[in-house]
Length: 188
Figure 1 (cartoon, rainbow, N blue to C red):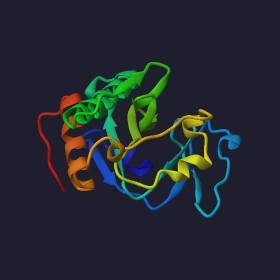
Figure 2: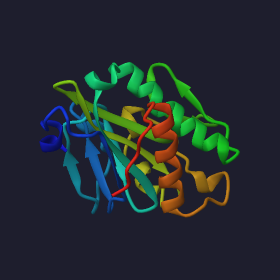
Figure 3: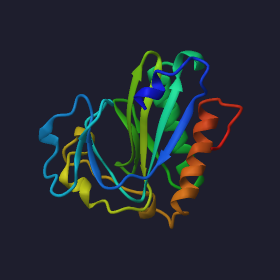
Figure 4: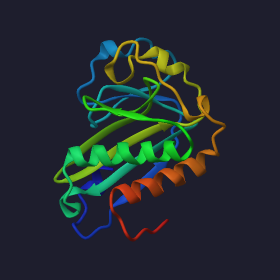
């Protein structure tokens, strides 16, 4: 991601869609006390914003490699577009979502369902978002998610019988494309 972010200006923006093996990630500002008990799950320090989170099977992770200067977007506008895309996806599934101005991410019934962790360098973004779809949520009990002690997490499967991981990932990409104002999309 870092190498791609240093790309030439004419390189197209990309979304990288992945599903990670179990891992805790610590953002640039993370405090180790929010990692309560890593146990057998690896811990990786990253250069994204935010605190500690968990990634694992059944979670859609999308890295957004966007030239913000070219898109005429600021960091706050990018965060709001991502939150809007996740909220629109969930609304399409019949799930009422909300955002919090001082706590980036998307929430359902007060529980976090999607986390954001971005980095902006030389006017380009990298890292991105994670959406809990149908996964083992117990590793979140080993951390203070996003640095908030006692924050409960949820997943799409707690609210509906979700479509498969790939369908959710594809649907979320479509919402991101719309919320970020792209008119041409290539899938590789």
